[in-house]
Amino acid sequence: MDAPANPAHGIFERFLRAGECREVLGCFEELCRELGLQGRGLQLYHGLKAALNYWSAKALWSKLDKKAGHKDYDQGTACASTKCLVVGAGPCGLRVAIELALLGAHVVLLEKRDSFSRNNVLHLWPFTIHDLRALGAKKFYGHFCTGTLDHISIRQLQLILLKVALLLGVEVHINVQFNGLIPPEGKAGWCALLQPSSSPLSHYEFDVLISAGGGKFVPEGFKRKEMRGKLAIGITTNFINRHSRAEVEVAEISGVARIYNQKFFQNLYNKTGIDLENIVYYKDDTHYFVMTAKKQSLLKKGVILQDKADIESLLSPENVDRDALLSYAKEAANFSTNYRLPQLEFALNHRGLPDVDMFDFTCMTRSENAALVREHNGARLLLGLVGDCLVEPFWPLGTGVARGFLAAFDAAWMVRRWAAGTPPLEVLAERESIYQHLSQTSPDNTNKNISQYSIDPATRYPNINLKAIKANQVQDLYLVGTVEVDHKRKSDNRLSTVVSRGAYEDLLSWCQASTAGYRGVEVNDFTTSWTSGLALCALIHRFRPDLDPIQTHQMMLDVAEQELGIQPVLSSIEMATMAEPDRLGLITYLSQFYEAFKTSSG
Ligand code: FAD
Image (cartoon, rainbow, N blue to C red; front, side, top):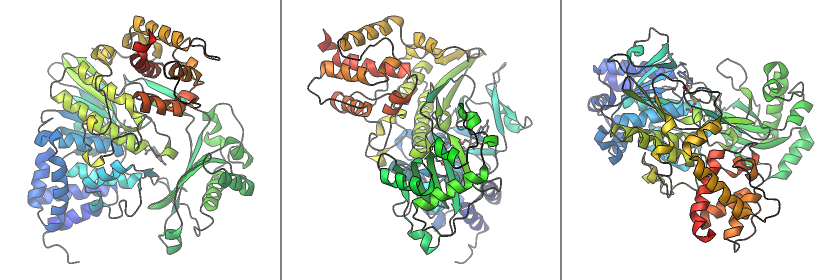
């Protein structure tokens, strides 16, 4: 192909193809300099469009124009006077930044690192593929979801989204770490405490903060909830993909779980001593495997040196034989691909070491709330969480990025409502009503018409009740002054502010009366009384004895949803495996039964 005559076209083509975070930012800066463009936000986008109107660029503009023309964005004016700070350039931070830019907000995005190094591969639900295509993903990454592929490496996804964000005028700053909030003083607004403190962004005043800092980073004020399941040790590994014919021919494994293929796992165990709960294999830039391994087999194979009661010590580097871990991962990869991947050679991670890691999924956390408002000196700040810092995903299920994108859209919708002047408690109540659904979402129970998805929750969640939680139930999410939330406060205290005592007792009495007389059922609370599933069986049976006997939580949840239209709030796994099920979740869920059955209870 001839080099484009216009130097800006050449820079733009380099920008489209750039494969490293710094390279993308460098090309973009060069491009803006070359074109003499200085603006930001959609103004910058329009400047780029006008300056780069050759055929290749035009194809991308027409995609982005179509996206930007959606009614939810009000021609890019919906949030024109809103200033946002987004923390974290992971897929979810970038995705929400794009939506905020399309809404016309001034968006600054901070990332503490300066490279995108994760080879690991994310599973994409159909809507995420559709969404990324609509953002022009193929223009930036030609291999994007070709054929039946439905996954992408984390770093490629970040690269695509970074490019879109820049084109839409998001200001992206790398090597800047967010360390907290500085409350407004005098006439100034909310600012961020940054590292390095000399960053000019320290003076940026904003009225919305979206945190997308990943699982380990949650801003002050949000409470985390632990979801403790049974011991689950995840191993991820990446091998170099040379794209040879032999490699192309090997079939992917899009999730073999023990329950579905006992024989495979039995053979694996008999032949190698490796004992797994599940395994996934995706072919992308690398050959990527993620598996959940049983502790006994890790001990037997010398990967874990000593058995220990607490998982942190169990998986601590001193207690792990790295070479044995590499062999374990390689053997599992070899066996599960029928030894058809020739010369499996480890890809290297950002530290230059073989890309193999072991993670604990026994205890995953999620935030109790998706948003809160702070007010100080009359200045309000809306804070929202998206991605892993809202809900940590279980990687082998690959739900992270799909639910992360859903939450990114929900957060953008919240900012739109905020910018429209909706009373803060209403904004928060609506956000919490939507958040209740997130952990339950799957490609099957979200709207089928994915081409209609937008930031409007009604386009994505069937029968969503945006008023399920009322403004008076979220008063404790409105924090006035610099008072910090007491982290030691028991989560139970929250209950008294969310659900009034009387309503709590009424609901408990009703549950007790409705389940009385059923063998093995004794309802005393909204936690462990429901763990076995019998209480819920009894409740449904009491009012609908015509339904088939229900044996598992999942069936009950499904029946309740299909027959009674009751949306699940907790997943069957959460209800069955958590030592202490989520009280508020259960109360919300059981309240729906109360509403459905109350006329027949008299
Ligand atoms: P992340 O992708 O974690 O991004 C958060 C970003 O915020 C990071 O770039 C981080 O540097 C930045 N950041 C954090 N704190 C600050 C701060 N204070 N200031 C500025 N920047 C900050 N999921 C799977 O399904 N399969 C996998 O195999 C898999 N492997 C993973 C491996 C690793 C090492 C990690 C961390 C995550 C992995 N995940 C995996 C999870 C998956 O990456 C996420 O679900 C997905 O990327 C969406 O996450 P996110 O955007 O919310 O956060």
